[in-house]
Length: 198
Length: 196
Image 1 (cartoon, each protein chain N blue to C red):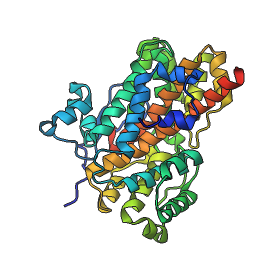
Image 2: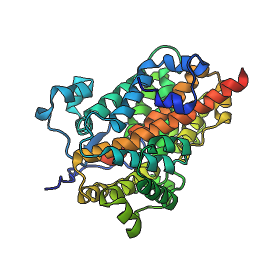
Image 3: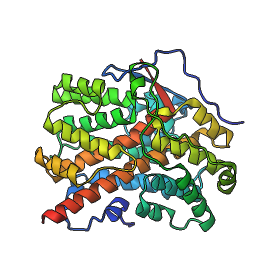
Image 4: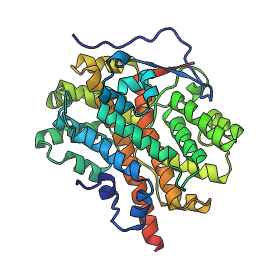
């Protein structure tokens, strides 16, 4: 017998980008909480993620999930210099805005707003898109994220030069690259394995 | 120990300025490689064979127009399958991301592009499983915001299981990261070399 596609329960579909807390409903069956083995728990990295249908679905390929999660954590949480956390989250939000991942954009716009305290600028990015006026430094980071998100990749020497002009050193530029690149990974999983609910 | 794939394809030499930059994010470097290994050299391939993984990687790299990364992933692929993948790339390539939003204010940002399924002849050369997987990965790479439950149903109908679909999705999503990291770091490397 083939596996089923799940039909999510009735829910409000978010039709705009928002900083509000959203839910995420899977289209494929996650592992049941009681079916999680020690290997699955190791792959979740944080035990609390056993409560998330998204992570319990990805836990079906535990090796891929564990390495994905540890990559994510170092790109965004490593505090050794480089790009400030707020701007790593800005790159994540901008990437999600371009790909159209309303769920990921909501989470990382919230983080960007919290860490930068520039709530109105973050909201303008969500409302107007990646062409929004955000000041030189943020516009350079957003433009780099947009170019990295394009297929084929459109990031070039002019983006690096612009990031340098607004004060980023090579470690900070590498952080922009990895933050945007990582959300090209995350967006595709979130968008294609389930849907957001308001 | 196997060479770090991102370093190798971005041209990052040991002892170089960018080698030092990557060392500051040592866990991300290690885990990006671990992700590569989990997807392309898994302990147990399970439902998605190593050849299917390589073929799908070649397809995703081809869609990105990244010949060198494609050649790396396609190494060892049977000639007939590699030719079929090249044909799929030629038939389905194009710029991304495009696609549709839920009806509402964002509908003004909807954009159109090719929604692709291999034709019967190409599907025959790829086989039903890979044909369905390529169609799905085309959507994932170029218009992921169009994803819908019907896409998953098509994969299930072609014989993939839920667990197999998770792995297929990780392959497309991880490569979208790996390709952008390689390309971005290669540009940064060139700019550092030009400045020194």
